[in-house]
Image (cartoon, rainbow, N blue to C red; front, side, top):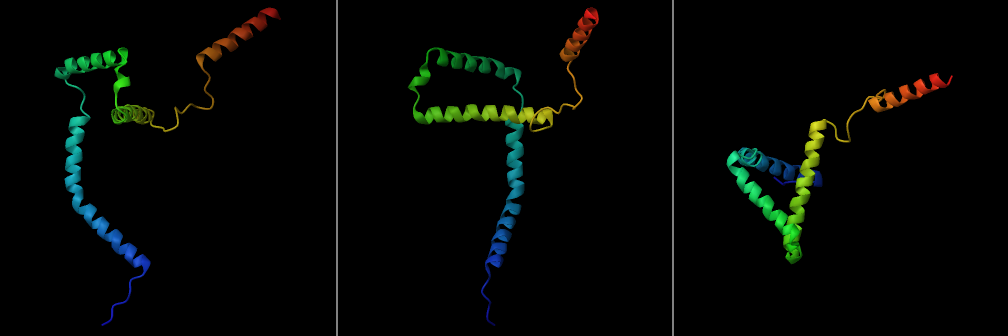
Amino acid sequence: MATHKLSFFEKLANTFGALYRHQAQQFPRRLAILKAVGKHELAPPRSADIPAIKADWAKLQKFIETKQYVNLSIKESLVYSAVALEVVFWFFVGEMIGRRYIFGYIVPANYVSKDTKAKVAEKKRLAALEA
């Protein structure tokens, strides 16, 4: 029996099927790793960690004050910059999660701040005195 030549879409479907089966097989192991890393990395600092954190912060302050950063290699400066960017990005992700909205705080259309209300009331009071 002659086999027919697979079309592009059949080859694509076979490839995606193989990738899916591989990923489905690897999922339990990867999930266990993710849970273990998440439990360790996302935990708040323990009270025993506070002195080490303070010492590291003091070293960082001294590093900046004495301008030792000019002695860093390009690779080291790129690594430190990437870590700083990661911290900033995670801060913004946390802000978005806290707001429960990506683009900013949701403010009702009829919202008027207390300051604006006070200014309007003051203008009305002054207008009433002048009249």
